[in-house]
Image (cartoon, rainbow, N blue to C red):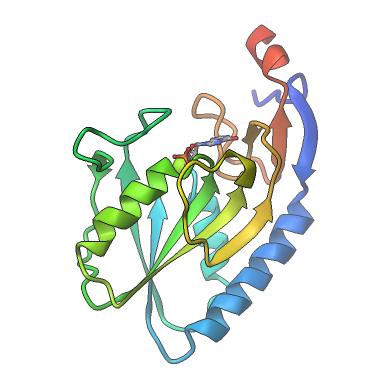
Length: 185
Ligand code: IMP
Ligand code: MG
């Protein structure tokens, strides 16, 4: 059973606020890409909810694809400077207008490596759309074109973001009380 109440410190972004902001982002993207075709690339798994809701508000033609990358925690780059791809795209991105759709950017290390790797495949353009931005935690500069919310340095869950792989299906973004989470069951 999904009993998250014992470790939910606060609801940071309620469902209605998420919906409204995601609609705005979709409309902004639609204006910017008018007359073009978009390839939206979702970084698994956290970005899934955001991607599916976002593309419902995108008017230009939009195709989707998925990419899985391994997270090594701090400094998620391997020695050759690239993240390890656990699931690669099935589409070739050469000459396409690629929009990376992410749940959250924290240190920025993961996305920096993904961007670097995708650039070598020569897309026509490459932009980043993130739902959440923990700006105060940034270690590497990431050019973020579209951002839903800048959030404080707190561990969040829900709406795609997990706690030990669960709770991704909650409709809001909540802050975790880590002490209470560890003490649960
Ligand atoms: P970065 O490489 O430090 O930017 O890490 C980004 C990844 O860390 C995200 O794609 C998330 O999977 C994970 N992450 C960072 N902060 C949180 C959080 O507050 N809740 C859940 N996952 C997080
Ligand atoms: Mg992620």
